[in-house]
Amino acid sequence: MTDMKANHCIQCTVTQCRYHSNCDDYCTLDKILVGTHEANPTEDQCTDCKSFRR
Figure 1 (cartoon, rainbow, N blue to C red):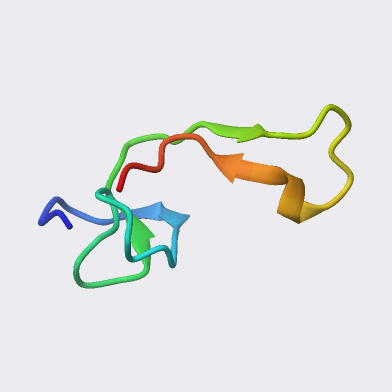
Figure 2 (cartoon, helix red, strand yellow; figure 1 turned 135 degrees about the vertical axis):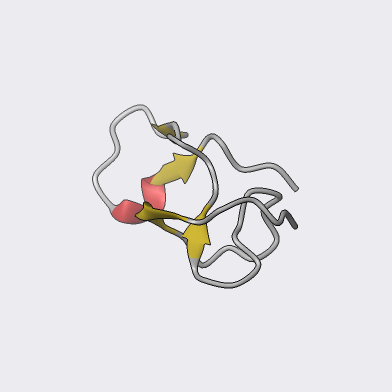
């Protein structure tokens, strides 16, 4: 976990991520990368936050 300032433009509930705000359900990064693990994504479960770090 980090004590960096929450970015209120990026909501996040993944508390296991290194970039998750300790105080709120927000990311502390300035920007994130969203990608997919599917050749033809059709549902939200097909997308991934590529900025996630354990």
